[in-house]
Image 1 (tube, one colour):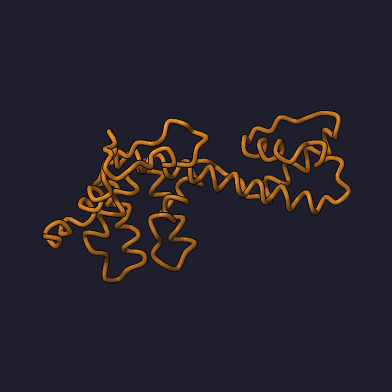
Image 2 (cartoon, rainbow, N blue to C red):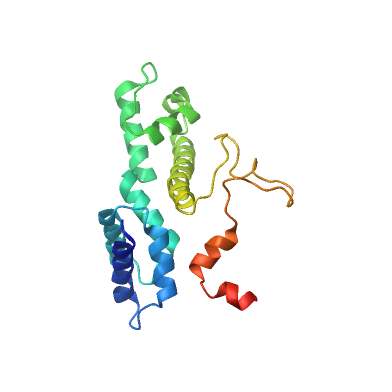
Amino acid sequence: MTPEEAKKVVSILSVAFRKDGIDKKTLDAYAMCISDFPYDLAQASVLKIIAEQDFFPSIAQIRKTAISLSLGLKTAGEAWEIVEQAVMKCGSYRRPNFKDPLIQKAVNMIGWQELCLSERISVERAHFIRVYEQLVEKERSRRNLFPLLKTFRVSLPEKPDTPPFQDSLQKPTEKREGWKPIGGLLDRLLPGRRSAKN
């Protein structure tokens, strides 16, 4: 989405929640941080927030809403219902293939046999819901973080299994190629910052 379209989306929020509007810096910061989404998705997210919330949302809330809409994520209750139906249909002798990769991963982590043969299904339900919600949050974070870092031209560690930035910690004297200091981002968000420091 273009910067102008992003500002238009944020302006909808401003009209809905703030009688006196928002200042230009806030508008620019919000627009910059949601500009990686398609216009229609950003607009749908904002309309959903307006319908469901009473207060002006944070950038994080807008991004989470947009990612949830784009992924078509099921609630933990809906996911458990799909698993329950599969247990009744397949039993413990056949393994179903779930269309939703997060449901499949949660079932694999718990174990199909354990889910089917458990005598305390309420415990397995709670376990599944906890695992599924963690997977959903991890997927949201992954989808949320990477486009933003790309927007700000921050490079990521090449090893996907290591925690973000763990490989990137170096002595302060060493220079990293491809990395931009956070000050550059702050200068973009707060243009008067540099002159105030001097």
